[in-house]
Length: 199
Image 1 (cartoon, rainbow, N blue to C red):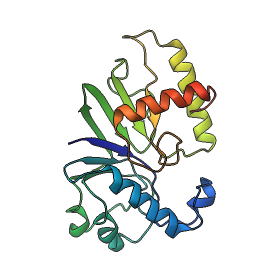
Image 2: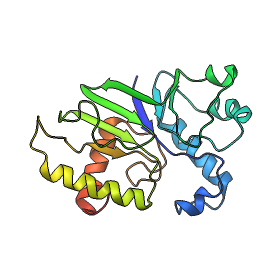
Image 3: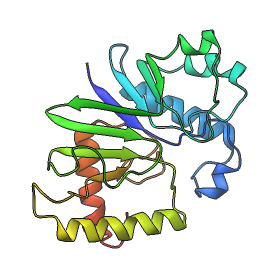
Image 4: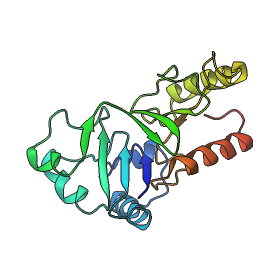
């Protein structure tokens, strides 16, 4: 039984191919790869925390897509997700919320679609804020600059730790696949060693 995290899948969203420069020929190839990657990692007793902008389709089309994905699902709603869900769709999720906090392998995890640099428990080195939303836009650059500054000045308990991580599926360490917290932390650290100016 494991926890996985991912954001901004945008299943069914044709324009996201260009917006993110996603490496797929068309939206059908992207959808199929996202579903294939998900089901290759996630087992029926695992939980996937989806940090928003999940499916770009009418709410009535959600059950058939969600039903094709393994595991238990918690949706942390994004700006492109429906504001209201039918009872049929709601039953397919363990929870639908705007913010979620859990413990995972002794770490405090705060999740929201939007980045929250100064989050609850953010002074603790074992606390992490996972988010999506910013893709690789001007907001991405702003949050990258802020993260570098916060991390440069972190001195342990008593100062913010800067442990906020973009789990958008397009991030290199996500590679369009739900990841565990340890994979995300390790992948993010490796990515920053290789790209010191990146988010």
